[in-house]
Length: 230
Image (cartoon, rainbow, N blue to C red; front, side, top):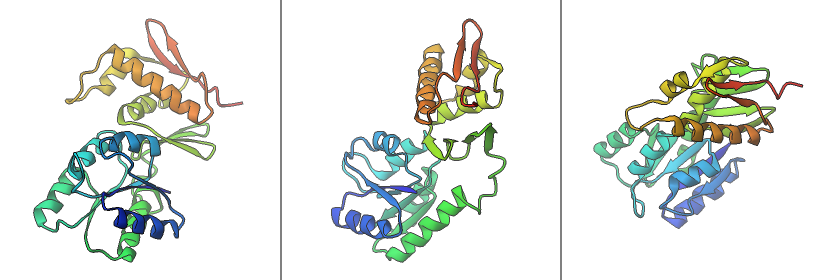
């Protein structure tokens, strides 16, 4: 499991990294406080540890931006201990909140519990959130696309497209239907948005060694073909 730590106190960051690596977690730490969402996409973590007081933008800002593209679990770790800060963290999409100073064992316990609840045996919606076709599976609750033991993290829009195509494998899915799936109140959606996100989804499939699976049907839409089935 990969954990992304967004903390500007180098000492705390290093302590968390060293401690969690002892328990076989793969740790990535923030490099650019102005590009947290970009690094998140690059690292594809299973969980984020996020401070509130950060350079440039605060943790609430980055929590909203991560939540806009992923359901990845987020735990705030902050010295701010007011009830309002904790309320704001939850309202901005966080799953848990730990106040500083903290005990490393408590952090570890909360991480383990949250990972079990989201990815493991405690997930109540596990069966309902999985769409699968001949070994290619999509978890719509976590945005992970998987094949042959390899996983890649999708954005929210990529996940919506993958869900639509996987639900109707070998069938033509119309552009109108896909545009409707992508539509929300925040973003303007047009044919270019659809094309861009379909290109990105093709790249994510390539990460799984699946190529030429999405076919463009001119004037009609797109079709997901089982090119991964030998």
